[in-house]
Image (spheres, rainbow, N blue to C red):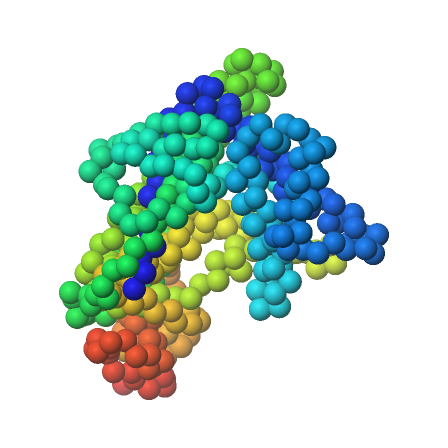
Length: 403
Ligand SMILES: [Zn+2]
């Protein structure tokens, strides 16, 4: 089995190196936007150009002749940008993937420059073509970490004012079987509580955004009072950027801890197949059909995104795979309204957020644990083969009358 793993470090470029890296980012963005604009223009004229990597490369050559500054920075990241653009068109035109057309890139958004070759990695530095050796920081956590496997590419990113380098690696590892044969566990994720397991344990969320919401609002008010682009404005802006970075780190740390613990203790994990994109869709609606409860929905959206469920699922998936475990996804419908004991489905079963009280059989339980047990059972109903792990026997989904 091929194990792909990314290693990420905080990059510490000197001022001159950072300036050059910024220039690289700017050039990649320029190339992407220029070729995208040309495509759109030619499309409107009814004379579309071929949308593949080879055709883009030919046009990059012409672009470089017109704009010599593109030649001052490494050329590989620009080519990689065009690969990404070609891929973006391929997915946009794929009827099975409902992705939008590629969009113009704005300055300041998290962007990466990728080097597929020509770079070298040492213990605490990376050599990048035309940039030279750039140091990266080894934290207490990463100091002992060794990069294993063949390094496929290096990507440099500027995120919230900080530079990072990540290395994508690949290595062959023996197929493993998870050391724990069971028990299988179902997980219910929620806004009030991050995750409830069917065995009765809970994981609290970091709620990083909520924790720092007031401080963020305070800093933003302060920024608004400053003269734009003045020295004090820049300082205030840097504080906000730093806080955003802290929020992201706190959130990521909590997700990693939860996914590591769960993947270590359980060989098979059942999760709801939540379409997070659908759940957080704007409630605003259209002019003809305006949405209801727009403000409340916006607040919920923010909390949903703050929980990082999509990232949690991604981490669980790969961490389980590394240990030889499996992640199963089941339909989430009605899992929170169904009684685990008798199978009665009713909204009345959930009079409050925290407790579940079945109106048919009187079964009382923690609402999240009840939902997690239903999720676990649903995997059994689906009869998905899961390597000999014993799932609970499914029960009939029929309502029984209360005795
Ligand atoms: Zn019941």
